[in-house]
Length: 134
Image (cartoon, rainbow, N blue to C red; front, side):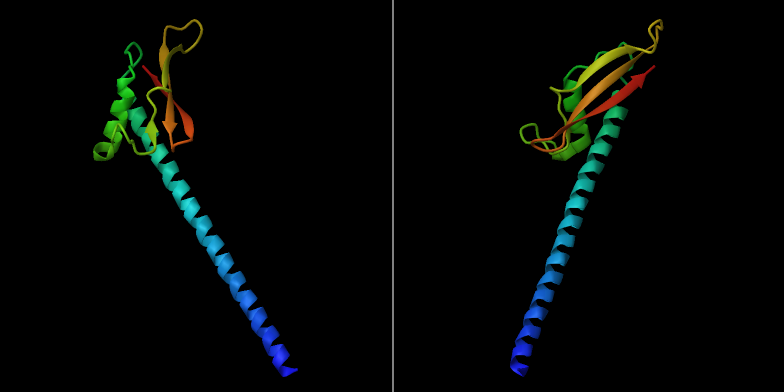
């Protein structure tokens, strides 16, 4: 009888050890995923702020052509920028657009509403709106 209870105790101990190891592994995976997500969110935030600062010199009446978005990417990423294989996130020049919008229907004051398409990875694109006024 003693030998049977020893085997059961050993099996229960092994099951508990496996349970603890699997919980620890799950926690490590969740933390790793959250850290990667936080890093990507921070980079998107920094890129959006950089784009706002960069575009703030283009007040109403100044045209913003598509080459400006490529220039934003080059300036933001400096030495890491490569047109053939760009690092993520980056401003997609083809999807971004600019609108001159009047402040009110009877007002002469206008502001620029710039929609930035930011590619955060191969499959995901997010929109960020930058508003620049006089």
